[in-house]
Length: 269
Length: 288
Image 1 (cartoon, each protein chain N blue to C red):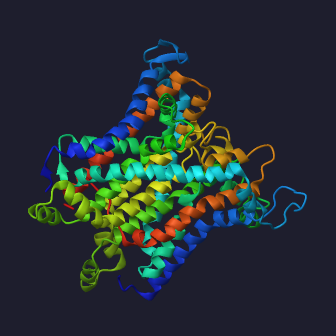
Image 2 (image 1 turned 135 degrees about the vertical axis):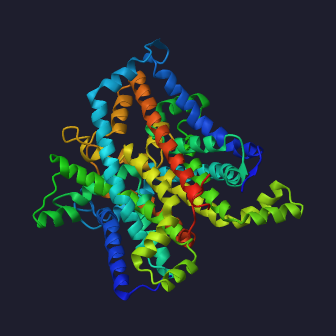
Image 3 (image 1 turned 90 degrees about the vertical axis):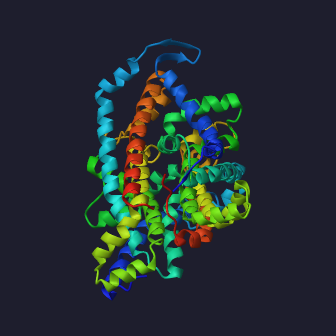
């Protein structure tokens, strides 16, 4: 990019390093505790360095199903959010229709509505629909914040596609649907990946809806973690589960790093 | 220019339906409940605006409102400049970018209910890395009894948790600046500050507006993360708005909690409205 003076470059490197250290500290602490036996066991004394916390994850059926549930509801959420967000983002980006600004405002309002405000009625509504205690319920509830964000991000990507491309396609005889499928979608593929990642990120770690919608079944990782706290909390196991819960996201982040660093602009109406 | 075309509604209809189901219908339910005294959901009677009057005139509501406002302001003051600064520090050489971004984003992947546990472990005076370090320096952190210390821990925790989001958004917007802008600035002999002020910052406006909106609202309504640090204490000093609402719901006070929810939603609407006003002002100034 810019050729900055060497001193300036050093200042930047030091600042970034300091921030990375700050970000890492709690994570290092977490990882350290996760390898320690924090409750005495017959074969491992208290405070010993051990892998037993991690092996416990594999053997505990509750924890195993919690990981399966988390993956299931996030995947379902992305499968609902992305296909619904793409046409909406296209409309907000390219078309002017009656009430578009108000609708966008309403969408934003739902994104920033704190989940705790809607917990009770969502629980009632979902009970009457018969989708509590299932991964589908959580996936649907999380659309409340993921859908507006997805429209927002995707709209930025669509707006970056030159308008001339639409016009040429229409002249070439493409219908609007044909244009979206055959020309627009391949163009915004990185945008779909980034959107999917953001959906994953906001949904995977959410707690409020996940808690009220899973009293008996379908508990995700965050709730399995809650259940580990008790009279005698095995904090080593808690930390090991937390580390493990971050691994899919970290893998995704690593795979996505190119897309994230290529940059995007957020949409505007 | 966008074309005038009401078929746009067909494209937004699926999204509107989903948000109608998980957003609008529950919201209307809450509005309905807020006018009733409810013992069980089948037995209720009309109380009109009584719950609203109770909340608006209660000192506790305004105290929480004040605390949440102060908290959000502090969070924005730290996170937004810090996020911009770190985004500017991320090197532009390809290999490092991805790794730096990935490491910086890690806090976003921690389940929210574990964030207080991580920080309590970190601050533990006997076993925590930071707790021991600060103790060794002669600054023991007392987040149980000291109000400033509790606030410092909650703010540090939120900065740790969410600054990365600001960094990612800002970094993404920075990469869309054409190289030629920098070359032109170099020819004009612009210093780092001028480059930032006239080239980088204008490119960040839209993304910053979004970052400010998300960070303001999410910190204003902080719930999961704040409470476990000190159960709202010491002496109620970390009872924020959403924590109050959570307590009310846990106590099964349907009517009052619904009224409180509606009041919070009105705040949300006002914030969203000022956001969209700010956004259209920006769009007028610099046609994108």
